Length: 149
Image 1 (spheres, rainbow, N blue to C red):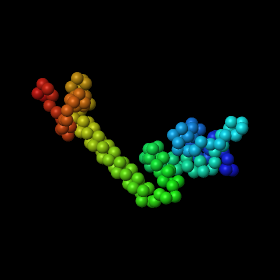
Image 2 (image 1 turned 180 degrees about the vertical axis):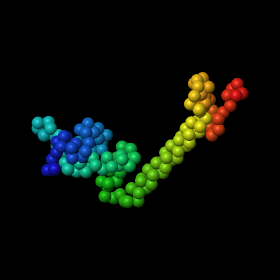
Image 3 (image 1 turned 45 degrees about the vertical axis):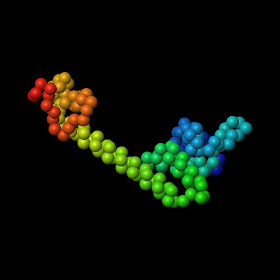
Image 4 (image 1 turned 90 degrees about the horizontal axis):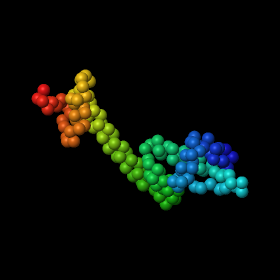
């Protein structure tokens, strides 16, 4: 890298596609580049660092809006680490909530699987009947059929 990069060079250095760079520009995550008289855009080395920051933050589950907030904290010399830590703590709490939701879904699906032999017509499929019920049903044990079987 020499300090001034084309979009293609930037994409290669940052490990993203060229369209990703345009998307980040539109979202305000990276600054608009300088344009040469020829119309070519020139990006700085700092843009590579910023894109890598964005990608790492996305890998950690941060949304683009949250990343924009983190970038503003990074650029503000008056901000402190406590604010960054608070945001990370919020993200961790959100992820833990999603993990609990996923575990509940997994448990529910396991309960449905145990109710169904996987044989016979779908007319009396306990999994499909559960989905049609429109109410809470205890899926830990098989439900009796409407005809009493």
